[in-house]
Image 1 (cartoon, rainbow, N blue to C red):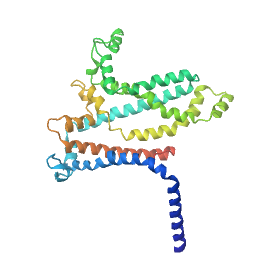
Image 2 (cartoon, rainbow, N blue to C red):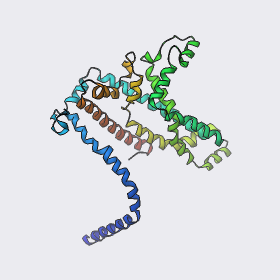
Image 3 (cartoon, rainbow, N blue to C red):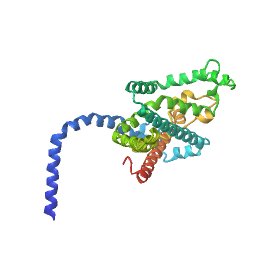
Image 4 (cartoon, rainbow, N blue to C red):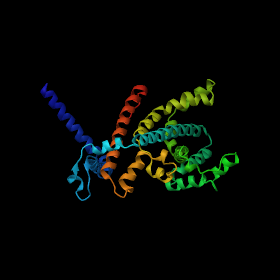
Amino acid sequence: MKEKMKKRREASGGNMKKRLKTTWPLFVLLLPGLIYMMVFKYSPMYGAIIAFKDYKIKDGIWWSAWVGLKWFAKFFNYYECWDLIRNTLRISIYSMIVGMVVSIILALMMNCVRSKALKNVAQTVTYMPHFVSVVVLVGIVIRFFNPSIGAISKLIQAFGGTDRDLMGVAAAVPHIYVWSGVWQNAGWNTVLYLAALTAVDLELHEAAIVDGASRFQRVRYIDIPAIVPTIVISLISNMGSILTVGAEKMLLMQNDLNRGTTEVISTYVYSKGIASANPQYSYASAIGLLNSVISFILIVVTNQICKKLSDTSLF
């Protein structure tokens, strides 16, 4: 038995050497990506240790005093803690659901277009907003909702609405945030779904047409089941960022009138860790670390649920 195990190890070792001789160019191509990940993604992670310390710049990371879970307790004892979490979850879940639904519908509509020229025009028009910077996007949004010259405000007034600045209405800003994001990214997010739809066998559609299936029936029973695995993977991936609302866009849209619904975890971390006159680096790092841990747990849980329900998962 021992001799057989030894022969197997020797054989596997020999096969590994042969594979390395033939595939070493692929590992060379992989090397720059690995170096990038190690230098810019993994090596900075050691700085997360300041979440458990009273970090002082003069003392450095290693020589600052340990405080344990002090900063985590401070965050949960903060009187607006649950308001921050509620605002973050509300906007994130709202944005994720609307964004995925609109992208899926848009992809199905584009897939139904038979004219190649028209399809290319539609894809170009819907992709273009993705390349607009967040600063420019928010500037456009503020301009549109300006009560004096904004097109949206003028339209609301034409239908008998009141003349008011919606960017100052706390209840309206989350909707503006989400739908402006949908306008910017829906076309770009259709790429994955269109790629999955191109893999659908045309013979299935031909057979369905022969059987008298309508266009809607073919979309429902052929196209949608084909993109379900892609939808599941997108859902799992999005769950990892459910507590991460874009700080830069929210900060640009935020003002004193709408702060009650626009103050989220990312903006709070920015205000405490960077924008404050007395930056609390350890406190901000603790909140960020907590955010990452919760996101990781959400990915794992969602992945396991999807694996049981649909047999599709990331791992």
